[in-house]
Length: 184
Image (cartoon, rainbow, N blue to C red):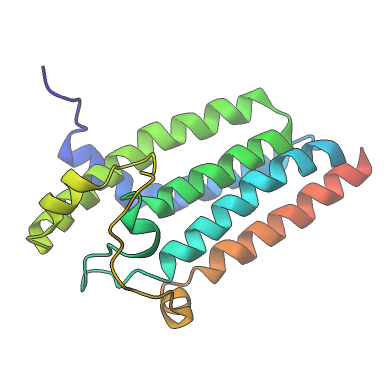
């Protein structure tokens, strides 16, 4: 019995509206969260780890031109999504709302997984080496040993991939959550 795959039409539709759906989720977080200073501090390590992983990945990614195999891509195939998941875990911890945990988990399963499947098909078509890379590097949980490509982090790629937008959005969200925590 094979692994479940999302229908192509669904994956394409989700890829088109995932940003809008993510914004709706961010609004839900802002509205429903009841953070405390303690919950913010507990969630902060997850969020920072996720942002660092995303930044590291963005500094190694040349979209649709070169198969990214250096930096975090030597350890896992989806460091941007893994970083996003870590940030989401931190936000859920900070929010102190179980409903948000359910919403974030549902979003990840119903939106990100089909998009990842679609992206992997695209990478297979674009890069002949992708199949060997996928066989060698796990999708999610990083492997401990690697044969990392000799690629250095590039701030230029970080900026080109606009990863600073994730940092700015996170900072705005943290200001809002801190305001909510201060109001009790």
